[in-house]
Length: 339
Image 1 (cartoon, rainbow, N blue to C red):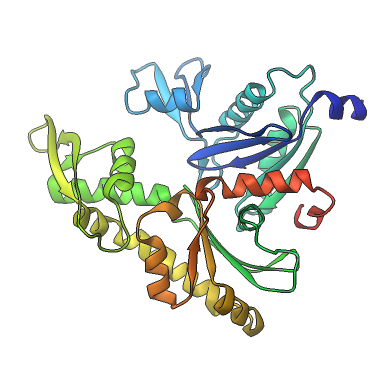
Image 2 (cartoon, rainbow, N blue to C red):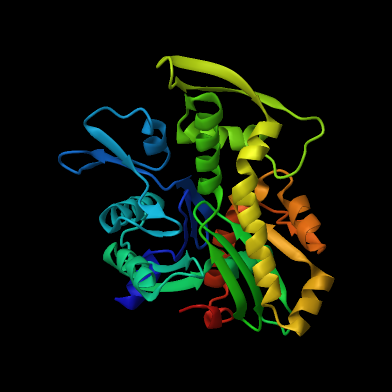
């Protein structure tokens, strides 16, 4: 049966993110990148839509439909919905397979508890995985970027995802120091929503906040500064309203979450052994994750630490799932990083 399972199913690497789930299938590449959102019927709990289709419904639900983000701060908040989501995604990428019994490598935040790790493992096992291996997100990101994680040299990665920011110094196939803070892309979106409510009495949804962040958000001054329209509901007049905001205002809204990420990086550096700190001084830090694409984030880290900082040149968002892919492709080589 083990032989047949290997023959009829491809191994799978999953980046189970708070904001997006990315899936790699061995031999096929990255085949799925969809929002980690599920829409279901309120009364029957029957799943109506998953991923991109569910995101389109977000903020537009009627009384019979609810949209759920089953992962919060990088870990499972709703076990049943997460299981449904994983099952849907695996079936989608394995649709042409006779048997669905893949080996799965899943990335988890470095600060995950044993209970949280067990929840991820159990969810994958219950959807039909033959074997389930876990790898910490910063380790997967470092492997995906191409850092020499097996060598006796320090590599530092800063992975800013949707729910968590993972900061780690890696050497000899292990994490030497790790800082996992639950401030990342989602917290930036919430900061924009709250700022618009306080300054303009304008209530905007999470999709509009995310759009503003991508359009004109930044961690450092832009040249020139930019403007974008935002639509929401006026809390005083109780009617829909559109107004223009500029990048200075959104940067002010993002100041606190950005400062918390920078403080986390500094704490990680303070705890780094001297020999590895010297390596990082020479080699610099690498920035990955969707939040790493915030304009000016790299420059802000350089300003705060005086260390060379580089953005993943291939695709910051897919660094973790690319790492999972390399682990599956060279399983014997990277077995030490799995648990």
